[in-house]
Image 1 (cartoon, rainbow, N blue to C red):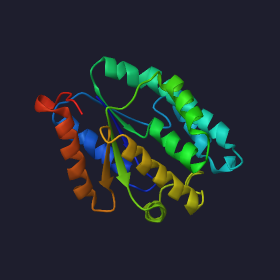
Image 2 (image 1 turned 30 degrees about the horizontal axis):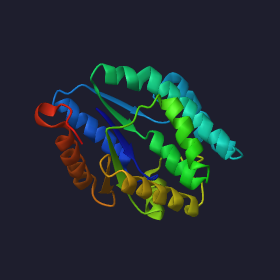
Image 3 (image 1 turned 30 degrees about the vertical axis):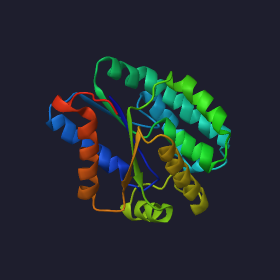
Image 4 (image 1 turned 180 degrees about the vertical axis):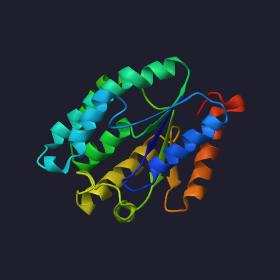
Length: 212
């Protein structure tokens, strides 16, 4: 089963990913945890380029193609092999991030993004996507208060992050069988309880894969 976690910056999805993976492993399930951009040595090198604030002049097309290159390596090197071994893959971001950030956020053509993404991912799509929803301004404030490094994407104007959030919500509305929207503006424990409830239902009896 392939589960992705998506959300605006500061939504808490990375924390939720760690908690979800720990819970699944406590149940004895075979889990692979990964993230985007990254998930491989090559992908991590591309991540460094994408997040470096010194690259503020990066063009939107360049940005999207770099994310896609990292994703192609990620799928071929880690995600596909893990799924073929019947492992549960948990990814902090995946292809929907490019649709939200480079499509809705940057205004790149959505059909082009979908076409390139299909090529990069070899058609691998998540079975379940958990979307952690929070107001863009609140998410950015959380990022500031967290003390984590402020990267190139974080530095975009509030209007950009609002477009990204709107894109995510439209994606969720268009595919309710795959997407589950979770209110992220709550305590970590409350959010994680909802995450576990959703995943438990999807895995089914015995913790194996169930239909959506």
